[in-house]
Image (cartoon, rainbow, N blue to C red):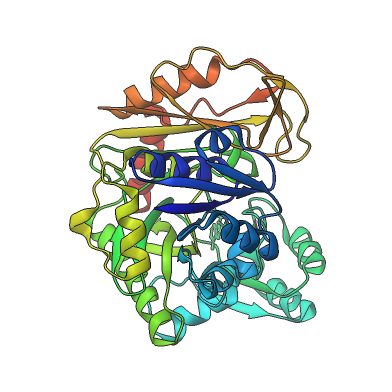
Length: 428
Ligand code: AMP
Ligand code: GLY
């Protein structure tokens, strides 16, 4: 198929790379800055903001693509799927209305409540900052403060961790467009991504992401510093029962969206907190996770085109989708100072990457040299028969890069995994 990939990060490089593994595809790409990895795989690229529907449409018409795969959330919110569908292009990604499951946190929580779906924490939605502040004062302590709209994964403030009462009040005053205040959940986080064709839902291996910038889960929240999967596609602190509960929540959300008139087609990303009482929803995303896409797409052993056809034609079937039973570890290199004050425009040199897979993200290539930009730079994925093997491969490749970048050495290590398992044991 002739397929357009929208987006220019590590996630989209992984999508393009998986599409390129099947012989018959011709890939085109729209991205705001040239990603060297995607550019290498694409027949032609268009450098334009990922929300510029006019340029995306014009490029689609020029290239004659039949399909589009939308990577990030911003074009979904801008209505890229509605626009391309009107042009007769079959899209992997929800319409603007269905994408509200991610782009409008109040919509998501209310949909779950209205349809009686398990997994919501206690929450309240406020459009008036004074009322939100009064509520926070009454509930001194354990709340998560979330802007309703998109924030690039960096908008949440957890009281008692990142802000105190006064900090939460100051933050609420800064937010435009409403706030969701919700119970602070305690547990271990995991990601469940699924292919969805409006009705059918096919799950992918579970992944654990690492939001905090520094080792030991310290420092500010980031877009995600790295992630891992296990050979059995589960995580050692998630039981079969937890998995079934999380999957059932996602299936119920897909059914609720369809029955309310917003059928969901694309990748649905569920972020869960596994609590003493089972999985609770932290949020849904209307797309693959970044970095989580790099883990699961590196494991996909069936043809991604099969999933694209299933999603767009409503014929998705678990029997046609398979993942290797290997472990993966993904480590992102980020500029020194990221996320607060990233050092940009610094040259990087890659070392020996061994068996690691390399995915380019927010990096610029000039005259054959790579330079850092403001966001996550490159990711290495190690794949192995054990988590330890996958970690060693990713770590060796990541630490062989020279330049003003750093990465989390602890992601995928036994020490970190044992801490997660012990934490879950203590809660249950
Ligand atoms: P989000 O932007 O919704 O993915 O949230 C970013 C991070 O904030 C999550 O990965 C969690 O670590 C944390 N978080 C969000 N909501 C809650 C909550 N209700 N309770 C505890 N932690 C949360
Ligand atoms: N890794 C989290 C996200 O993509 O939102």
